[in-house]
Image 1 (cartoon, rainbow, N blue to C red):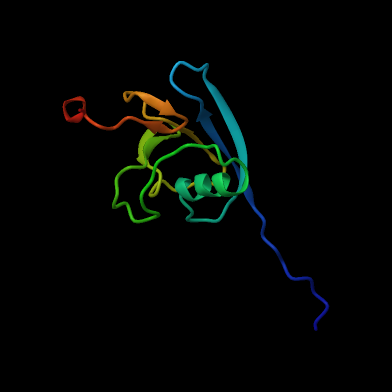
Image 2: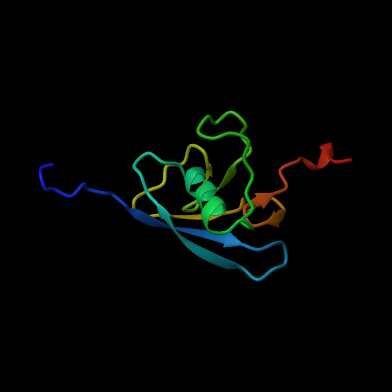
Length: 117
């Protein structure tokens, strides 16, 4: 053993997430999440739901594949897929799509009106 302490890199960043349902007063919860270069916003949301707040609602069908196209939200004010939007070291603000009916948290109704029964 050479007497050096192994280095650990526990970098974290903030994820600010719009919470609540339709008609609820707007509020944002802030979560400290582990940060690694290249991770997606979806990675951070999945971590929050698994380790901090299981009530956080968001929709996705895949991770990092951009195949399902169901994880669309606003990331720092821009429409993005959560699975391909990269989390910045300074964090991110995540909100539901503004022109879709809000169901809860980041989940919006994305079914076109003419396809509803």
